[in-house]
Image (cartoon, rainbow, N blue to C red; front, top):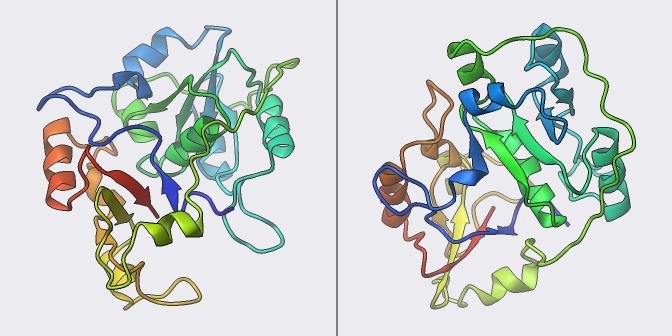
Length: 253
Protein backbone atom coordinates (compact mmCIF):
# COMPACT_ATOMS: atom_id res chain seq x y z
CA UNK A 1 0.00 0.00 0.00
CA UNK A 2 1.38 3.38 -0.94
CA UNK A 3 1.15 6.35 1.37
CA UNK A 4 -0.50 8.69 0.94
CA UNK A 5 -1.36 8.36 -2.73
CA UNK A 6 -4.12 7.58 -3.44
CA UNK A 7 -5.98 7.93 -0.17
CA UNK A 8 -9.43 8.56 1.15
CA UNK A 9 -9.69 11.76 3.11
CA UNK A 10 -10.71 10.83 6.67
CA UNK A 11 -13.09 13.73 7.20
CA UNK A 12 -15.53 15.63 5.04
CA UNK A 13 -14.23 18.51 2.94
CA UNK A 14 -14.20 21.41 3.04
CA UNK A 15 -13.62 21.40 6.80
CA UNK A 16 -14.89 24.90 7.48
CA UNK A 17 -18.24 26.36 8.43
CA UNK A 18 -17.60 30.09 7.95
CA UNK A 19 -15.12 32.50 6.49
CA UNK A 20 -13.14 32.54 9.74
CA UNK A 21 -13.51 29.17 11.49
CA UNK A 22 -12.95 25.48 10.84
CA UNK A 23 -15.44 22.71 11.54
CA UNK A 24 -12.67 20.65 13.18
CA UNK A 25 -10.31 23.16 14.83
CA UNK A 26 -9.04 20.40 17.14
CA UNK A 27 -6.88 19.09 14.29
CA UNK A 28 -4.63 22.15 14.54
CA UNK A 29 -2.57 23.57 17.39
CA UNK A 30 -1.11 27.05 17.67
CA UNK A 31 2.16 27.98 19.38
CA UNK A 32 0.49 29.61 22.39
CA UNK A 33 -1.52 26.48 23.15
CA UNK A 34 1.52 24.24 22.71
CA UNK A 35 3.73 26.44 24.90
CA UNK A 36 1.19 25.97 27.69
CA UNK A 37 1.29 22.17 27.27
CA UNK A 38 5.02 21.55 26.97
CA UNK A 39 5.18 19.98 30.43
CA UNK A 40 2.01 17.91 30.01
CA UNK A 41 3.00 14.22 30.44
CA UNK A 42 0.13 13.17 28.18
CA UNK A 43 1.48 15.15 25.20
CA UNK A 44 4.20 13.98 22.81
CA UNK A 45 5.58 16.44 20.23
CA UNK A 46 7.00 14.78 17.12
CA UNK A 47 9.40 16.80 14.96
CA UNK A 48 9.53 15.52 11.36
CA UNK A 49 12.11 17.96 10.07
CA UNK A 50 15.42 16.79 8.62
CA UNK A 51 17.77 15.70 11.40
CA UNK A 52 20.10 18.62 10.75
CA UNK A 53 17.17 20.98 11.32
CA UNK A 54 16.18 19.21 14.52
CA UNK A 55 19.72 19.48 15.89
CA UNK A 56 19.92 23.19 15.01
CA UNK A 57 17.02 23.75 17.39
CA UNK A 58 13.61 22.33 18.16
CA UNK A 59 10.59 22.69 20.42
CA UNK A 60 11.53 21.67 23.99
CA UNK A 61 10.61 18.05 24.61
CA UNK A 62 10.05 17.24 20.92
CA UNK A 63 11.18 13.80 19.83
CA UNK A 64 12.71 13.37 16.38
CA UNK A 65 11.31 11.19 13.60
CA UNK A 66 13.09 11.16 10.26
CA UNK A 67 10.61 12.32 7.65
CA UNK A 68 11.59 9.32 5.51
CA UNK A 69 10.35 6.93 8.20
CA UNK A 70 7.70 5.52 5.86
CA UNK A 71 10.00 4.92 2.88
CA UNK A 72 10.26 1.23 1.97
CA UNK A 73 14.00 0.43 1.90
CA UNK A 74 13.45 -2.30 -0.71
CA UNK A 75 11.39 -0.30 -3.24
CA UNK A 76 12.12 3.30 -2.29
CA UNK A 77 8.35 3.94 -2.28
CA UNK A 78 6.51 5.80 0.46
CA UNK A 79 4.43 3.07 2.08
CA UNK A 80 2.20 2.51 5.05
CA UNK A 81 4.09 0.35 7.50
CA UNK A 82 2.70 -2.99 8.66
CA UNK A 83 0.79 -2.49 11.93
CA UNK A 84 3.41 -4.15 14.12
CA UNK A 85 6.23 -2.02 12.70
CA UNK A 86 4.25 1.20 13.04
CA UNK A 87 3.35 0.31 16.64
CA UNK A 88 7.05 -0.14 17.37
CA UNK A 89 7.83 3.26 15.82
CA UNK A 90 5.16 4.95 17.94
CA UNK A 91 6.22 3.23 21.14
CA UNK A 92 9.82 4.20 20.39
CA UNK A 93 8.64 7.83 20.29
CA UNK A 94 6.77 7.48 23.57
CA UNK A 95 3.34 7.44 21.91
CA UNK A 96 0.72 5.27 23.58
CA UNK A 97 -2.99 4.75 23.11
CA UNK A 98 -3.85 7.70 25.38
CA UNK A 99 -1.22 10.12 24.08
CA UNK A 100 -2.09 13.46 22.54
CA UNK A 101 0.35 13.79 19.65
CA UNK A 102 1.40 17.16 18.20
CA UNK A 103 3.27 16.90 14.88
CA UNK A 104 5.35 19.61 13.27
CA UNK A 105 7.95 20.23 10.57
CA UNK A 106 9.59 23.06 8.64
CA UNK A 107 8.04 22.09 5.29
CA UNK A 108 4.59 23.74 5.37
CA UNK A 109 3.27 20.72 7.32
CA UNK A 110 3.97 18.29 4.46
CA UNK A 111 5.59 15.62 6.62
CA UNK A 112 3.58 16.48 9.72
CA UNK A 113 0.31 16.00 7.82
CA UNK A 114 1.48 12.63 6.52
CA UNK A 115 2.17 11.41 10.05
CA UNK A 116 -1.17 12.88 11.16
CA UNK A 117 -2.82 10.80 8.43
CA UNK A 118 -0.98 7.58 9.29
CA UNK A 119 -1.92 7.91 12.95
CA UNK A 120 -5.55 8.32 11.88
CA UNK A 121 -5.19 5.32 9.56
CA UNK A 122 -4.14 3.22 12.54
CA UNK A 123 -7.02 4.46 14.67
CA UNK A 124 -5.27 7.18 16.68
CA UNK A 125 -7.26 10.36 16.16
CA UNK A 126 -5.87 12.26 19.16
CA UNK A 127 -3.34 14.17 17.07
CA UNK A 128 -2.82 17.82 16.09
CA UNK A 129 -0.71 19.54 13.44
CA UNK A 130 1.18 22.61 14.64
CA UNK A 131 -0.19 25.22 12.22
CA UNK A 132 2.78 27.08 10.80
CA UNK A 133 5.25 24.53 12.13
CA UNK A 134 8.75 25.46 13.18
CA UNK A 135 8.73 28.77 11.27
CA UNK A 136 5.70 30.07 13.17
CA UNK A 137 6.99 28.69 16.47
CA UNK A 138 10.19 30.73 16.18
CA UNK A 139 8.42 33.80 14.76
CA UNK A 140 6.07 33.92 17.75
CA UNK A 141 8.85 33.59 20.31
CA UNK A 142 8.47 29.94 21.26
CA UNK A 143 11.19 28.50 23.50
CA UNK A 144 13.92 26.48 21.82
CA UNK A 145 15.93 23.44 22.91
CA UNK A 146 19.08 21.92 21.40
CA UNK A 147 19.59 18.66 23.25
CA UNK A 148 18.07 15.50 21.77
CA UNK A 149 14.94 14.41 23.65
CA UNK A 150 14.84 10.90 25.06
CA UNK A 151 11.36 9.42 24.42
CA UNK A 152 9.29 8.29 27.37
CA UNK A 153 9.46 4.58 28.06
CA UNK A 154 6.67 2.08 28.61
CA UNK A 155 4.07 3.38 26.14
CA UNK A 156 1.82 0.84 24.43
CA UNK A 157 0.39 1.70 21.02
CA UNK A 158 -2.40 -0.47 19.63
CA UNK A 159 -2.91 -0.07 15.85
CA UNK A 160 -6.53 -0.39 14.72
CA UNK A 161 -7.13 -0.11 10.98
CA UNK A 162 -10.78 0.98 11.06
CA UNK A 163 -11.99 2.34 8.77
CA UNK A 164 -9.31 1.87 6.11
CA UNK A 165 -8.41 5.22 4.59
CA UNK A 166 -6.33 4.01 1.66
CA UNK A 167 -8.08 3.91 -1.70
CA UNK A 168 -7.15 0.81 -3.66
CA UNK A 169 -6.85 0.71 -7.44
CA UNK A 170 -10.34 -0.74 -7.78
CA UNK A 171 -11.81 2.12 -5.72
CA UNK A 172 -10.24 4.77 -7.93
CA UNK A 173 -11.11 2.88 -11.11
CA UNK A 174 -14.74 2.71 -10.02
CA UNK A 175 -14.71 6.47 -9.49
CA UNK A 176 -13.91 7.10 -13.16
CA UNK A 177 -15.86 6.34 -16.27
CA UNK A 178 -14.12 4.93 -19.32
CA UNK A 179 -14.34 8.34 -20.94
CA UNK A 180 -12.40 9.91 -18.10
CA UNK A 181 -15.22 11.83 -16.38
CA UNK A 182 -15.73 11.18 -12.71
CA UNK A 183 -18.64 9.07 -11.58
CA UNK A 184 -21.42 10.96 -9.81
CA UNK A 185 -20.47 11.87 -6.26
CA UNK A 186 -16.74 11.23 -6.72
CA UNK A 187 -13.77 13.53 -7.26
CA UNK A 188 -10.18 12.44 -7.78
CA UNK A 189 -7.78 15.12 -6.58
CA UNK A 190 -4.25 15.39 -7.96
CA UNK A 191 -2.32 17.37 -5.35
CA UNK A 192 0.99 17.48 -7.25
CA UNK A 193 2.56 20.33 -9.18
CA UNK A 194 1.11 21.61 -12.45
CA UNK A 195 4.10 20.21 -14.35
CA UNK A 196 3.59 16.75 -12.86
CA UNK A 197 -0.13 16.88 -13.60
CA UNK A 198 0.48 17.84 -17.24
CA UNK A 199 3.22 15.27 -17.70
CA UNK A 200 5.92 17.87 -18.39
CA UNK A 201 7.76 16.55 -15.32
CA UNK A 202 7.79 12.82 -14.65
CA UNK A 203 8.79 11.57 -11.22
CA UNK A 204 7.12 8.17 -11.63
CA UNK A 205 7.11 5.31 -14.11
CA UNK A 206 4.52 7.08 -16.30
CA UNK A 207 3.86 10.80 -16.89
CA UNK A 208 0.47 12.46 -16.68
CA UNK A 209 -2.40 12.03 -14.23
CA UNK A 210 -5.29 9.73 -13.36
CA UNK A 211 -8.04 9.99 -15.95
CA UNK A 212 -10.65 12.50 -14.81
CA UNK A 213 -8.57 13.85 -11.91
CA UNK A 214 -8.84 17.53 -11.05
CA UNK A 215 -5.73 19.48 -10.20
CA UNK A 216 -5.06 21.62 -7.12
CA UNK A 217 -1.48 21.80 -5.86
CA UNK A 218 -1.39 21.10 -2.10
CA UNK A 219 0.98 24.04 -1.64
CA UNK A 220 -1.72 26.40 -2.93
CA UNK A 221 -3.60 25.64 0.30
CA UNK A 222 -0.72 26.98 2.36
CA UNK A 223 0.66 30.46 3.02
CA UNK A 224 4.19 30.01 1.71
CA UNK A 225 5.55 32.87 3.80
CA UNK A 226 4.15 31.87 7.20
CA UNK A 227 3.76 28.12 6.50
CA UNK A 228 0.24 28.28 7.93
CA UNK A 229 -2.91 26.91 6.36
CA UNK A 230 -4.79 29.59 4.44
CA UNK A 231 -7.98 31.02 6.04
CA UNK A 232 -11.11 28.83 5.84
CA UNK A 233 -12.94 31.07 3.40
CA UNK A 234 -10.00 31.09 1.01
CA UNK A 235 -9.60 27.33 1.29
CA UNK A 236 -13.29 26.83 0.55
CA UNK A 237 -13.05 29.00 -2.55
CA UNK A 238 -10.03 27.08 -3.83
CA UNK A 239 -11.62 23.69 -3.21
CA UNK A 240 -14.98 24.64 -4.65
CA UNK A 241 -13.37 26.06 -7.78
CA UNK A 242 -11.72 22.68 -8.35
CA UNK A 243 -14.97 20.77 -7.76
CA UNK A 244 -13.75 19.36 -4.43
CA UNK A 245 -16.93 19.78 -2.41
CA UNK A 246 -18.37 18.34 0.77
CA UNK A 247 -21.03 16.32 -1.04
CA UNK A 248 -18.45 14.16 -2.85
CA UNK A 249 -16.19 11.27 -1.99
CA UNK A 250 -12.63 12.49 -2.41
CA UNK A 251 -9.67 10.37 -3.53
CA UNK A 252 -6.41 12.31 -3.28
CA UNK A 253 -2.95 11.52 -4.57
